Every structure is written in structure tokens, then in C-alpha cells.
Length: 268
Length: 85
Ligand SMILES: Nc1ncnc2c1ncn2[C@@H]1O[C@H](COP(=O)(O)OP(=O)(O)O)[C@@H](O)[C@H]1O
Ligand SMILES: [Mg+2]
Image 1 (cartoon, helix red, strand yellow):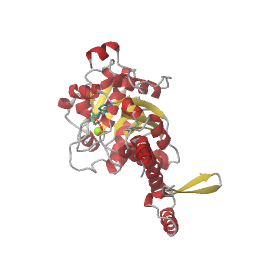
Image 2: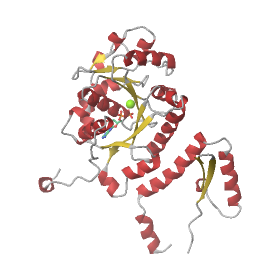
Image 3: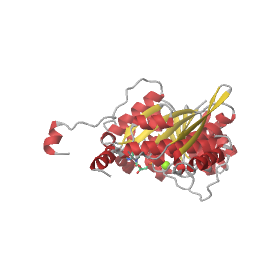
Image 4: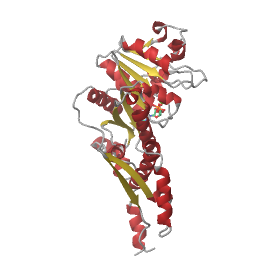
């Protein structure tokens, strides 16, 4: 039986797809058989972040409609043998995903995977609700910024009322992942701090991902940022996934980086 | 406004303004989406009553309902305008 995790946020452009790719890759790197699903119908881009866009033949909607088999539709990751990508459909029909269809696919995947990571589209409507409905755990991706925190709170409300577990009187396990964090700006009082966001959303903190040049570089190359193990963002995602799996890791990248002597002399 | 006031205004960081705004927003949203149906109207009525006496904005009243065992507690927060002393 696979564990179903949704990566969600309400607001767009906060780092859901980046997180889904990094999270799924890190789970696979740690030995867990993982599939990551793009629920963003019409705006497929997980395949780009995973670097498998040229190998997309069939998609999630084809699979649901029985036009392709699981074996034909899943794309094996180019780096990891135990990681697969299920691409979104480019159809313009936003309602192409149905509860029954999604459930059928998730059940089938559940038989052979340890983790199913669902990359949610933005918003709080049909697509986002479909991505979170079957989830047992949720990664709430939030930026330290008013509209993002507000939307996260809305999506938490939806998880608590409209998910399958909520309908059964149970709770989806929630994790806060604060991304695009800039400690310098927090120190100058220009950005909400981790504590501010934790206090308002009142869900447990899984990790903090710093604003990082490594993320753009990774998406340019189509290689999820956890493979860049030297980078701050790569390490922060690795920490977050280790914590998710029960390891005790201290939070890093919360403080302003002190410039090294050489950097101070030569700039940088 | 004195020079001290300008100085004091600048002391309040934009992050703390953001946090305050969020507190109000999130409380409103939660009430509207998760609370009993009558709460938004109750909130508007309370706003009207207070406005008879003090000039306050839409966001200055927040009503929250907490459930503790068998009892529900209605929490009412009213932010009055800055005192001019
Ligand atoms: N930690 C980060 N540092 C810098 N840029 C980031 C970070 N996380 C995400 N981004 C950038 O933000 C943009 C939106 O990210 P994406 O993952 O596509 O968000 P979403 O899926 O929520 O719409 C992308 O250009 C991505 O490269
Ligand atoms: Mg996305």
C-alpha cells in the first residue's frame, strides 16, 4: 500500500512543482519506490522540471479513459530506477479528472509503489480538490508573503473539510514547507519570519527552503535540485524529506550567511 | 504629527504589518468558511453597533468561535482607532 502525499498551496508560483520533483526524487534516492503525478491539467510542467518532457507519449487522462496502460504511460526517471513520472494531460478540459478515474489509477499505483506524490495545480477549485481528495498527508508549500499564507490557510481548511479522510471523520496529516525564504530580508524586517508563518497557520513545520539560484539552474537543466547536493536548496530539501521519514535534523539556512573572508575581499 | 511620530512609524517593519494584516484576514476567512452561517451577519451587526459610537473600519472587528468540549466560546476583538494623545 502506497502512502499518498499531496503537494499543495492554493497560490500559484510558490514552488509546488519544484517541491514535488525534489521530494519525489529524494524519497527515491533514499530507496523508496515513488511515483510523482502532475495534476495540473492543461499546464503540464512537472515533466520539464523532471527533465522527461521528450519522453511523454500518454498522459494521466489517457490512462483514466483507458486509452493507455500504466506501463505505457509511466515515464521512468532518467537518473533513478525506482522513480516514475505520470504526466498531466494538455487537454483544455479542466474537468477531465473525475473522482472515480483518479481513484482507479491511484489504487492501481498503490499496489506497486511506496509513495505517490501528487503535484497540485494552483487555486482551490476542481483541479486542486481532485489532487488533495485522496491524500493521507499534505505538504503545504508557502512563501513568506501575505497572499501565499492566506491561500495556504484556505487550502488547509479544504483539506480539513473536503478530503476523503475528512469525510470519514479522520484527518490528513499536514506539514508546512516554507519556501523561497530569504533570511537577510527577514532580519531587516522586510519578510515574514518562520515563526510568524508557523504562528498564523498553526501546523507543524517540516522544513524551510531558502530562496536559491540553484533552483532555477536545476529547472533549466531538468534535474531536480536534490541532485545538486552542494546547493543550499538541495540540502534543505534533503533535510525536509529525512525529517518526513522520521529522522531528527536541525533546521538550517534560517540565519543570514556570514560572508567568508575571501568573499568580502573579492566580492561575490 | 511630530518628528517622533515619523520616527516611530518607520520602526514598525513591513513584516510586522504583514503579520497583523494576516492575523485579521485569516480569522475572517476561517469564520466565513468554517463557522456557523449566522456568524458573518453577527459580525456585521456588531460592527454597526460599535460604529454608532466610534469610527472603525470593516477589518477592526473580528469574531471567532472556539469549541471547548460542550461549550462554545464567542471571542470578540475590536480594534479602536489610535489614541491621539
Ligand atoms: N527556493 C526557490 N528559490 C528560487 N526560486 C524558486 C524556489 N522555489 C521555486 N522557485 C521558482 O519559482 C517559480 C515557480 O515555481 P513552481 O515550482 O513552478 O511553483 P508552482 O508549481 O507552485 O506554480 C519557478 O520559476 C521556480 O524555479
Ligand atoms: Mg506547478
